[in-house]
Every structure is written in structure tokens, then in C-alpha cells.
Image (cartoon, rainbow, N blue to C red; front, side, top):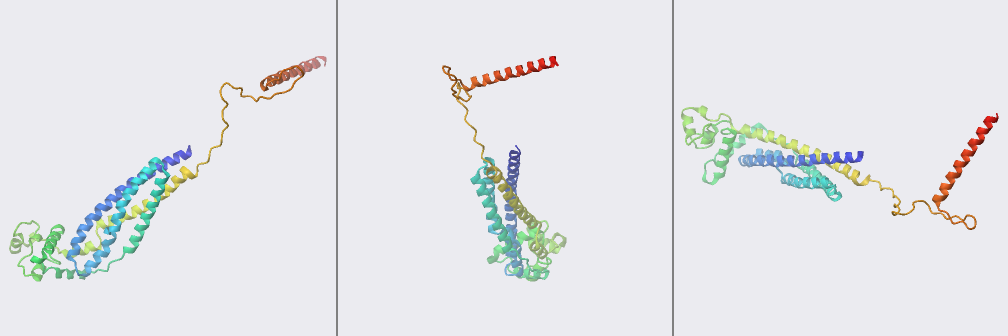
Length: 311
């Protein structure tokens, strides 16, 4: 009974861990997709600068294709583990344990191989100005779109200040994406009338903070560590469940077969009595023995009573 309760407890824990694998894998894929979108924008603005290398070193472990593939595979493995736990199937549970072990080794190797601390300084932000003269050119429409997208989403303008556009380009006013309330010609109107309508913070510090690490990156790292710990726990529980189901089970002791109905269960022994007397069965001899014992007991009791009276 105790072993059955232990098996039931192990199965419930594995159910919970498999559900946790699904949730954490989906969260990792979602956060990685969000970071990959912003990373592409940052890499476009920081191309051919030291900031580009620093951004790659920081975010490559989080958005590496190996990690994405491992998370997708982990969802399938969790489904197999759920079915194996539900049916207590040795083959499925063994495959589940082996897959978790392989995934854990791949994650560990990928994390160690891709981890590197980027060397970036705030002075490196000045190199972003080299990407500004190509803004608005027909050949660099993709760069123009990237600048506008980044300035709109991060609410910044220029590299250090909005005057960087006037310094590095032939523009008389910043792009309209620098306006807090955007409409066609808003930057020209703000430049001549009210500069407070322009974003006052430059995009350089925003990019520097992004490279140093965002909250989303910290969440992704926490999820990665949590998945690794959960995998170790799941492998331990799977081995324990396999041992409880198969390797700790003792073979039952053989029981003698029941006699067929209508037959005498007593031993049939044939004895040879006096001449002319039929052989008696074992039950008959047992009844005679009980009768003789009772008679003897009564005789002894009567003798003892007579001796007490004489005394």
C-alpha cells in the first residue's frame, strides 16, 4: 500500500513538471521572439561598430537557434513524458529520461559556449553617428525605416541629442519620428516654435542600456535556469518511478492449486487392518483417534475421582 501511494505521488509530480515544461517553453519562445525583433533593429543601427559585436555577444545565448529548437523539442518530450507517466510505460519513460538528459547537456554546452561578457563603454555610443548621414537616401530606405521605428518605440531622438541630426546631415530639422505627437511636418513646427514637442533624450543611451541587458533578457535567463533545474528534478523522479514500478517488484510466491469440487480434500491413505476388515480412509481413522482419546480421558478422570474418594 505504501509503494502504491509513493507511485501515485511520483506520477502527480511528473504531471506538474511536464505542465511546467510546456508553460516555460512557450514563455521562452515568446520572449525570444520579442528580443529577436528588437535585436535586429539594434544590429541595423549599430552595424560596423563595436556596439554591434557587444549586442551579438549579449543576446546570442538567448536567441540562438539551438535554444529555440531545444524549446520546441522540449514541448514534444513533455507530451511523451505525460503519456508515459499516465500509462506507466517502461519504453516511454525510458525515452523520456534519455531525451531530458540529451536536452540538458545541449543547453549546458550551448550556454557555456556562447557566454561571453561584452566590453562596451558609453563612449562607444558616439560611433552611432556614422549611421546618420545615410538617413533619407533612396539606397538606404531600410536604414531610414529602422531609425524611424527605433525613435518612435523608444521615444528618443538622435544619438545624444536631437541636434545630432542637424550636425551629421543636411537636414534643417529632425525627422518627424522625433515628435512626441507625430503628424506630417511636426518636427519642422516644433523646431521653429516649441522644442519641447521633440524627444529630449538621445537614442545612444537607449541602445547602450539595451546592450547591457534588459528586463526581458533577465526573465529569459531566469527561465533558462528554471528549466534546467526542473529537468534535473524530472530525471530524478523518472528514475525513481521506474525503480518503484519495475525494479523493486518481488515475484509472488507460488500457491498450490485448489482441489476440484466434489472430491475429498483429506489425504487418502490405505491401511491394512485385521483380516476381513475393509481398508479405512484417512478421515475415518482420524475420527477413531479422537474417540479413543476422549475415552482415555474419561477413564483417567474416573480413576482420579475414585482415588480422591478413597483418600
